Structure formats: C-alpha cells, structure tokens
Image 1 (cartoon, rainbow, N blue to C red):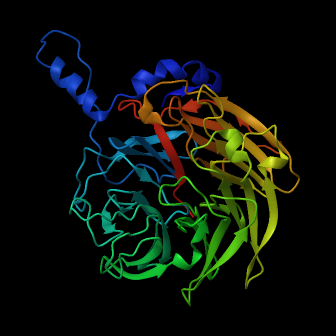
Image 2 (cartoon, rainbow, N blue to C red; image 1 turned 180 degrees about the horizontal axis):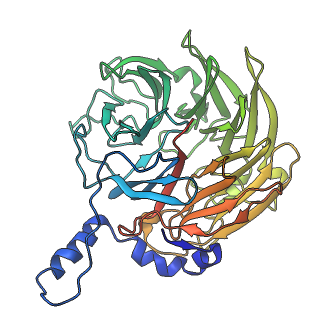
Image 3 (tube, one colour; image 1 turned 180 degrees about the vertical axis):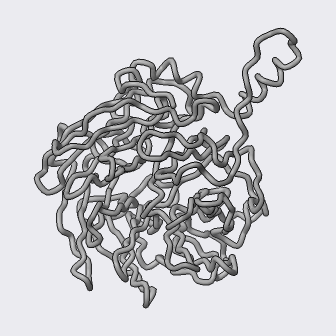
Length: 446
C-alpha cells in the first residue's frame, strides 16, 4: 500500500500526470522492448488481473481508467487496505466474460448484495455481474437488443443498474432512439427490466411523457441514477436536448414498482437533475443533485444548480429541503459526486471552476445552509483524456472515512467528525503498477 498526505498529493499532481497516464498497453510495450537486453535491469510486468476468492471481503470498489482506452477494478478492505489493484481489467477475459472491459465504466448508485456490478456506458451498454465471494462471472446483460458492433445506429447509453429482486434488475437508458421504427423493447429514453435468468430485456418503461420543450426544441427526459425507497424508485432526469446543450426544467421521476407508472416531481428553478443518492441511515430520504447548465463555467452553472432533499411519508414523496447555489455565492456550485455523510450533511464536487481546470470538493449542511470548500485540485493542462480530476466517492460509516478519487493523486481519505468539513488523512494509491487514474469509488454493501 502506498500512502501520501493530501498536501503531497496536490504538490505532486502535475508530476504524476505523466506516470499516471501510462496505459496498460504502454506499460506492456516497455517491458517487451526491454526484455532482450540481457544484463540490463528491466521493469517488471504488472501481475495479471485474476478473478477469484479474496483474502478478505471487500468493502469498496475503485474504478481506475483512461476513458475509451483501458480500465481496471481495484478492491479495498476498510478504508485503506488495497486487496487488489485489478480484480478485472481490460486485458483479462475470464470465463463468462464475452466482452472485455471497456474504458467507460461506472458503478451502480446502490450496491447489489454479494455482487460487483459494472455498468459500461454508450458504445458497449453492458451490465456485468461478478460474485464477490468466488469471483465467478454471474452474467453479462445487454441494455439493448442492438448489440455494440452490429452496425445498428442506436446506443442506449446505460447509466445505472438497480436490483429489483433476486432475478431482475432495472437499467436506465439515457439516450433516445431516433429510428423511425425501433424494436418495441429498444425505444430509448426509458427504463428496461432485465430478467437475469433468461438474460433478456422483458419490459421497457417509457419516460417520453416526461420530456420537455424549450423554444420548439425537444428536451428528452434522459433517466440517469436511481434509488429505491420502499415501493417507489426515484429516478434522476437530466432533461437535456439531443445535443446535451439545452436543459429543461429540473425534475425527477417516481416509479411505482407494482404499477410501473412514473410520475414527475418538478424542481423549479433548477435543471439537469440526473443524480440521485441515498441518504445514510435514512431509508425515507433521497438526495437530488441538479448540475445546472451544461457546457458552461461555474458561474454559468450556478443559476440553476442546487441540492434537493426528498422525503417519503410512506405513500408519496415531497420536497423536504432545497439548497440553491445562487444563495451561496462563495461556494462552487454542485455538479456531481454527491455523498451523504449522515443527517443533512453532504459533500459534492464542482468541476473546472477556474482557468487551471481546478475541481473543488465542498461540504454542506442542506438544512442549516452552512457550507465550506474542503479543498481545490488543479488539473492545469495535462492530458486531455483526464477530462476532470475528482470523481464520485463513497463514505464508509464504520470507519467514519470519506474516500474520493483524484485522477492525479490516487484516493483521497478524509476522517469525518462532528465538524462540517472532514479532516484529511494519508492518500492511497489504488493502481501502483498500472498507474491508471482513479475515477470512481462505490461501496459494495447496500
């Protein structure tokens, strides 16, 4: 395990850019080129990824990747023990994997009991399930009938996978299908129910009635992340145009599990509300993050960015609290990566807030209105493949530790106390050999 302080991580960020951008393929090329030089010291190859039983049950998964190139899945025990930097990677093909891991991989909003679940987005649109106890691949499930590489134009852009039952999952499909006569189950802008045993899509739940219109332009519902509360599922809706550059009025959908009917909750004054997150220790509440205008700087996003706390009374959901970025001009506006710290406390991330392409980590209390910028992490140029520095993190309540991935510095660790802002701990390198940037962290227990 390699640890560094947060100060070291920031100071070394630029020097780490070159080393952390070494792809698996590039590393292999160096090793192969050096091999014939007998008597010369050569770089050792990284141990191959190998699914199998682990020495300890993992608590969290870390996605490390270069977008569109290569990925690996690291596993952590507790908040600091690296069990493996690559249980699975883009170069491995264990039994049961028919499609190798791509470079655009995300983790579900809510963990699936006993499983590592990977969601590969647009261009692959595949859900992979792996047994955490044995490493056995339980299945790979396509989010659309038109398979990637088949020549079909439609790509569903799967965003999340939610467990409905022991035999079914629900997948959000972000992309509309513009075909004149699509397969009935391949209409986009929807949710699909997948039967795991049959490994097929058995139902499409259309969300077209939640589209909007701005100046004659269709704004698509674009479902994203999902959280279940009892018999209801809260679905974040980005509500963006075909080109993602125009947003409609902020909204989430509430799906009744039994009737399969989706009803809206409008979030006036906000937009781009695709991110929803569970609230730690409270199964009656859900947090909604609204990112505001896309393709805009922090000032442009601020006007319609904010956080909303939804609360269930057992039969319906209502808005319990609203935190708008316009009311907090000294704090960077929320953009993504919300994590519940318990009660009304949350952290979120704001990207590219200045000329150095800095990302900010911010802590807020959504009911009191208090807030504090925890730290700022500049990207300042670097490889364009990084796109941003911070990624979605996770909070381990048993350890009171917040984990946040930093592309240029590994996994940031913070001790959460009664104070609003957590205290920094030493950082962890989740990819010491492959040197892949840390992208996302998620708990592996519900």
